[in-house]
Length: 203
Image 1 (tube, rainbow, N blue to C red):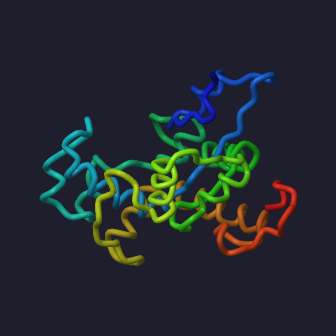
Image 2 (cartoon, rainbow, N blue to C red; image 1 turned 180 degrees about the horizontal axis):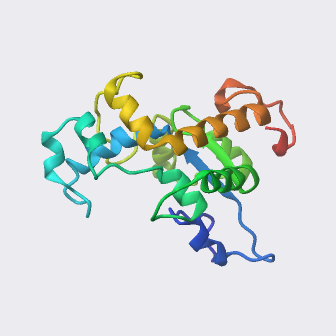
Image 3 (cartoon, one colour; image 1 turned 90 degrees about the vertical axis):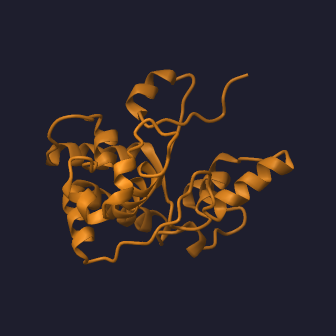
């Protein structure tokens, strides 16, 4: 009765759960750093159940948020390099890139249906109607607690501020895009057709 999937934001802390006898495979669903920052801003200003809820965020703009101390700095680089506090350097970015390259199976949140990549690779099955319904909602990006909000135009002052605050994550995201394109020919799983019966490592 072992778990099939473990979800965590702390992959380095979770690593001791696995051994040479009981091996695991890390899969990552990445989101563009600007989209993530904007979504987090709107979430924290409205999600009363979140321990980091801040009602004051409902009264300021994204640009003001990007100038404040509340903004996250390179969250993905911190998670992958296991450096959640303190200053980050190019060394931490290099560690994060190596973790993605050698340890992770990567897909992208904005690629609708990219979860199919994980389904194919891991052989996931959905045994109940409720499970299939949940899966279909995820495929349509209709996850729980999703908060509709306007996008921040690229090149706008807010976008530039967020990009500057997350400069390492921006580079890491671009690296992940290039890495996936080299492996499968395109960024999004749905952009290519995997030949029937092709080895999983080729898809």
